[in-house]
Image (cartoon, rainbow, N blue to C red; front, side):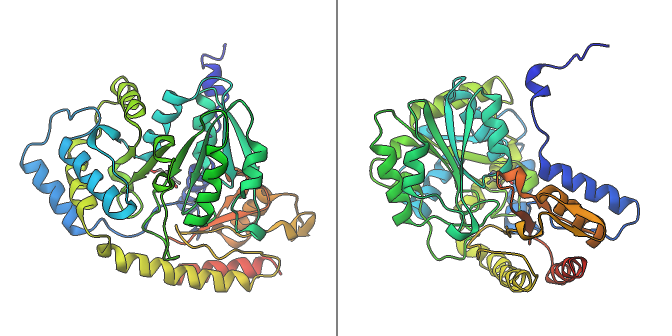
Length: 396
Ligand SMILES: Cc1ncc(COP(=O)(O)O)c(C=O)c1O
């Protein structure tokens, strides 16, 4: 039989984070005692005041199609959030609400990238950027970083990566997977490079981990002079409010780009879930201090894991300042044989940890950094301690 599938889907990679999570689930179902550190979602419940707002929305019959770009009340609340947290003056016509930040990113790619356009990705980058850009016909241009530079790119590296075909730069800060946070000074230096180019280069600033940030500093690149018109600010409620399943993300963008994203979404999914949108009004209007307990718990786990990982021979680590991942460089083990298994790369190492330590991680290759693996610390301190103990034992 001929393959009925399109070249587009045949050329698409499966999300490796989801693939590892599925494999871990399968092994668990077979009775193996697997500790899964592979998935990126908070292990907290959605706060009660948000759940109450959703229940109220059901009772008030918010059951019909919503405007494609989101309820006006939600877009106004998002504008207040952008002003309060980021000093950004977006208006409702700059906002598009989508079914998760993932759809926001997909819309942007479809609306802004022509086949052959280059998109710069500081590596490591979030796993889906690469494929979303490829689906749009764009060419991802990876700019490598390492643990030594805290996984951040320099203005010189950016300048070198830019060509006449460069259309955009996509990055997340706090970064998934490295946890690195760019400060205002660093973003100002990168902006200078962008604004000095003869071609108009746009930036996708993915700020979904904004509130899970221990650095005491946060900067939206759109707030840097000259960058507002060049930036699409992406955010959502999944991570900060433990609402991954509710599927609400949003952008703040120049009006023409926002309109284009609305046009695209109108042909694909229409407006996002009506009940989740009403609940999100309450979430984004809440003072970020409601998240203090959760953020403190993540910081405690970060400190715990960093301490334990530092104790594992051959692991090199930056101290992540945000999100809920650690991203150690494990290249020390490449070329070594452990319990009869040859470790050639991060894939082999991650599979070794799964089979010998019963711990699920994600290979750095998925994020464009082949020397590292990613642990999520969005789980209990007891499980994290046990996981690090098992890993250490499997490596001696
Ligand atoms: C950096 C980054 N951006 C976007 C997303 C997607 O967010 P959402 O669940 O709102 O689609 C994730 C989820 O893992 C992420 O880590």
